[in-house]
Image (tube, rainbow over all chains, first blue to last red; front, side):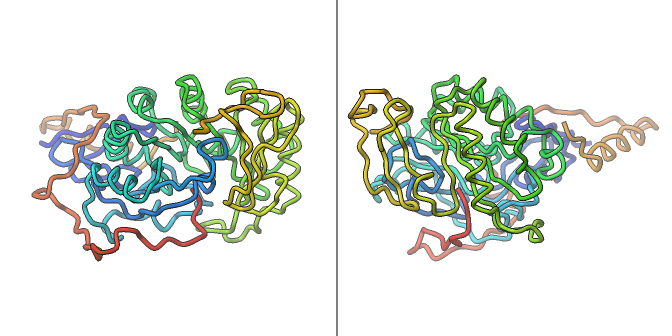
Length: 325
Length: 63
């Protein structure tokens, strides 16, 4: 009789019978061994501006090689990339691209960093790990864009290879994570703390969904937790929701809601609060938390001016959180 | 932690069935997965045009 396999990568702890795939759709038990189906098979490779991740405190204005394989261990009803995150590995065209080729591509196209993004890089963990390892050896920087739904041990193993991360904090209640994402909040909070404590440049994104997580008290609680546990210098992005996947009945997030969320975050004491997926110039710029002078001016994903000098405000010499060169 | 009812039921039934004479399957805990070697391919990837490694991507994707 073939052994059952318990996958301990993420807090789902899927127990897999022979031939059965996990909730992520990409990890499978074959004759008592756990295999990853998408290792070396990215379904998406693209060069994006780093601002699209979104990362506003990491090498502004630079291109970033971005890749993903199919699969995700969460099943958010509002998923904006559901065509690749919520599909089976064999449903999309891919070819085998070894990790060495990924870093070679980044160098060839003059990208100083690589993003593991679009779907869930912690679900295709082994590919992410190998790519990160080889890229770091070649002097490239690694970026995770993730929901942070992973167990502590494998995440700690990966963190020394990571330079920057944008982690989704999708809501601030267990109920939201259970009903909308098919997950739980607590492991995500742990991942956020581990990332910050490891010295990785961390930015947090909250996708604001009308009627689901857009109450004042939702923003208040989330921002207070960020200040208390990650620090007031942690950049926070409020992103606009678009009707997608299983939430096509909801309207896009109004600009007013995003501005309200930003104001609450600033009132709580966060120093760098942005709104995204929508053009709003003032809320896209970085200002010095001390003298309030304009440091980085952005329009959409474009950097119009970057006045930060050696990581500091040129006027008052305040050190600005981030990786700037 | 959300309980996956399908998997719980599958494991529970397996345990009940195996109580009657059949050996209970062992449970192996694994965190890290092995890349699937070609000889074990259960799925078939279609091959893309190798001259264009970059994939078309809808502008609506985030991240």
